[in-house]
Image 1: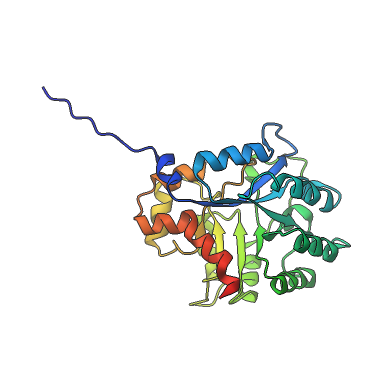
Image 2: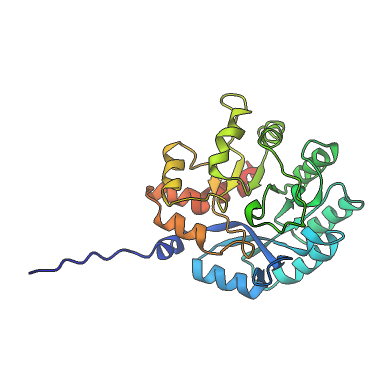
Length: 278
């Protein structure tokens, strides 16, 4: 009797060939889980393991501190350890002195700006957010809005988060028509609701949504591609708040073609970063 064995390639090994870009990563410690912590060494190890070209990194202290400055100052030190750590400063546009913080970001060579409105108590529709986007556009810096950093089902019961609804996200996308915007922490299954608030045929060519909150089986990414959304989404781990390799494994194991995997892992991100030059 002949035994036939089939060798299955490791999904993480497949992912590591993609030269991926992690759109959402952090240094620092998540306040309610000591194990959810990462310094630059851990991110560098992750980059080596997964073959990453770069990680868009912010400091968690800028999310939860009394202001964003202390965490951003620590970010510059952390990002100096490896050129693959791309600093994304967190700015609260309702905080006094945010324009000075943005100017420091420019002087220090930030690769982008990150907003965490649900965790810092401001909405997306106010004039302060509009002013920040305009200032970032003038500097050629992309802005990513983190709608969620954690799953509300496991959120600390004493921590209040102001949820950002689909209509508010869609209105921001509409206001940013033709200009770059990044979104993080959106479930793929929530995208149809967001899209329903947009005009038919709305230009999404400069919108980029990360994938860390694309929960569910591996088949979710195949469905995403079959629905023609493989140019809209990109890899993001939300490490260390989330498991570092979960989305990488999904991308390596997904039943998608070579070009679709390449777009989701890194090509969409590279196009997004280059969009300001077009």
